[in-house]
Image 1: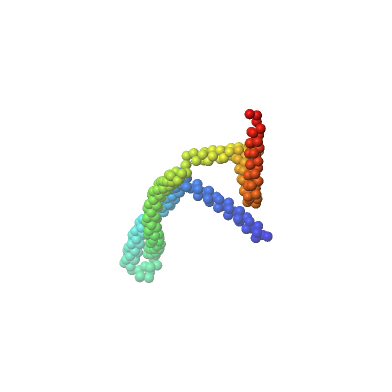
Image 2 (image 1 turned 30 degrees about the vertical axis):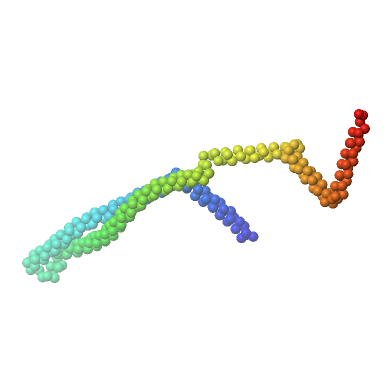
Length: 280
């Protein structure tokens, strides 16, 4: 039961969608409808290309920011390199001065000024390593992003080319539909199917004429004035009488002929007698 109901509603749905598709297909045979459909597609393509360009622009801006960061980090690295060199030079000078004063190397290493130089050097070196690592990561990101940008630019060029092809296809499709419609109309006219409405008008007038003739025939039959019916009746009676005479001749043969001849002879004699009795 449930399966039957389900199939019933599915059949209704398929029927409705099928009719909708047929109507849509017939509508799409209209050149203006096709032109409008292509305009929608072209508009969507343009919108996609514009959004694509915006995304590429944002990616380029991100790459530029990373390049700027790399430049700043590079400047900081150069500065840290100088600071490292300065810390080493200061530590060497401090150690030389302290040793000149008679301090042993172990005592120099414990001296506050020397320790300060060593600590500064270590901090500069740590910062330098961190900045160098950041620069390396950013440069890798920039390289990958730049490769992606180049690919996206190629895609943009391809999309523009596709857009131009769609525009050309739009013109060709509309022209083909218009030509096909004109050829169909010409073919219909050549085959006797008028597309200017006269064929339908002639058909309607002929139907009216046939209906009028039919009403006239019915009226004549009902009134008993149908001449063709009378002719048929008379012809049937004549054929029946002729057939009856021929049948009698075949049955009675010469007897009927002799009787007829005798009757004619008696009629002739009576006529002669009556003539002889006339006064002279």
